[in-house]
Amino acid sequence: MNNDLWYHRRTVRLKWLVLAIAFSLLFLGCSPDSPEPATVAPAPPAPAYEGTIVAVGDSLTAGLGVDEKMAYPAQLERRLTADGYNFRVVNAGVSGETSSGALSRIDWVVASLQPDIVILETGANDGLRGLDPGLLESNLNRLVERLTRQNIQVILAGMQMLPNLGPDYIRAFADIYPRIAAKHGILLIPFFLEGVAGRPELNQDDRMHPTAEGYVRIVETVYPTVVTAIQRRRLR
Image (cartoon, rainbow, N blue to C red; front, side, top):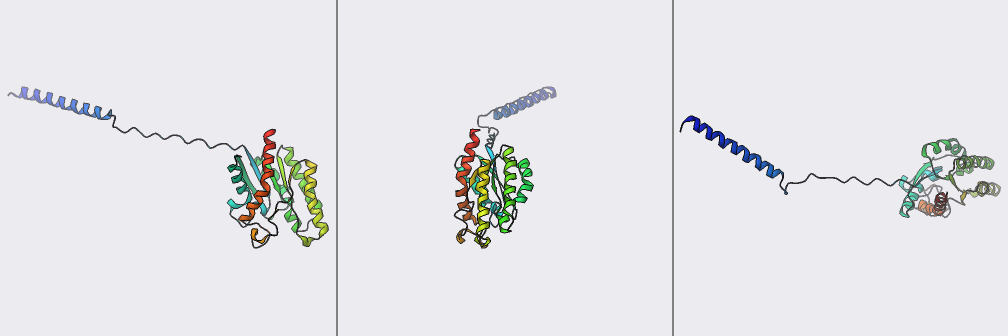
């Protein structure tokens, strides 16, 4: 066999080999057994909150001495969610705060948190310090006026004082909350610590701040009024 014929046959065989390999690769790439690229379905968007509830108050709202998840604002949000009310509840409690302190920061609370509903729990530290009940009433008036002026619903949490402060002071203090609520036409929780105050098993060792179980009871007290506020908001 001459060299030219041998070279020609060798070239033809190489061409067929290349074509065979190419077809094999094409066939394998189109095989129904070839794995399809994985596709990941996008996560559904988180549902938007219907509204925001801000709990303004002192250490009783902040949850001094308990885990933040067990303070009443967090427990209240879980209860609302379980019952189909998609509202965010923000804990804006500051331990040791008086009604004057609440008044000094209320504009910041409104601007930064943009609440639809405010649960206002303040005054206990005023009473414990023996401050003039007239100052508490003035501060509550101004707090409620600032909130309602901005179309924010207010739930006022009533407070009572310890008996060692004397009957006149106790009466003057307790009468402020229903008077403010009636004046402004806002919702009132007559006594924030109903069923908790004076019960050692529901309070920490200081006998003043609720335990996690105490906050469960507080949510029971607060909850019906909060639902009423939500229903009123929906009717606007």
